[in-house]
Image 1 (cartoon, rainbow, N blue to C red):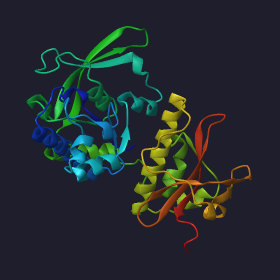
Image 2: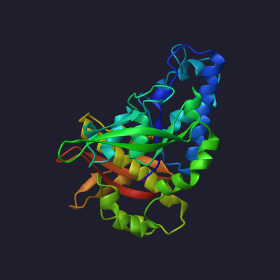
Image 3: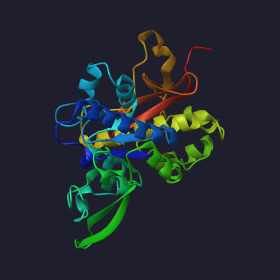
Image 4: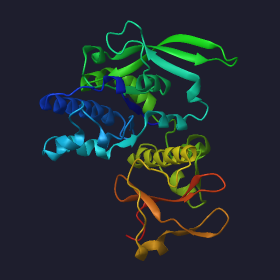
Length: 317
């Protein structure tokens, strides 16, 4: 499972900030997230609002800073990240978890936001992930935040426990968490053959036509394409899971998915598992090289995606 980051809504400044302070907060968030990205390029940043519309206090936003020609690189980095919003969208990945049966709160003696619900911190604990905090108070400079977890047991009785959530507001904090984060984000398979054998468990919302089996099983241990392909497949799977929960018209992918050009559609026509020809137009790139994953979205009888090709861009020799 890829690393899940959660932007700490409690650390977000809720007053007008001097412009210089707002830009420094933006730079701090990006520097911290970029340090985590180096550990797991497949990570997802979860936030209460989409990052492109993120506010930095009541008088400033990422968009307004970029419109002044500043922090352009930082805003582009955030835009390119896999982003999921609002925060509780992440629960769709954990099918066995009922989000109404638990709540996380800061401790009553916390120096800020005492005893308030802590959505991002709680989800970071639940996912064994990481909270990214604005450096808006010394309290958010801690690498671990104590929480109180309230949960209903099987009999409907309230259980209260004390837990710790990983937290970071600087690249140095990421360095301190690195060993744990690498363990969390590390795939459980070593090669394509193991990925294929575990596909139903790891990617429950995806199906694969027969021609994809040798494509996946042929990926050897150490091939850099393995992690890249896994990141894209996991992103498609998560998008389908959220789509199924929301009942929206179309899935929202955490990366660029585009249709094949009309002149190339003949290259992406393959027989599905029933032997029927299908056109796998939608596709996403993967590195290194000109890698492509082609798939079809199926709304019925259960929402899922059918993968038809994983490999080099077709028709280029």
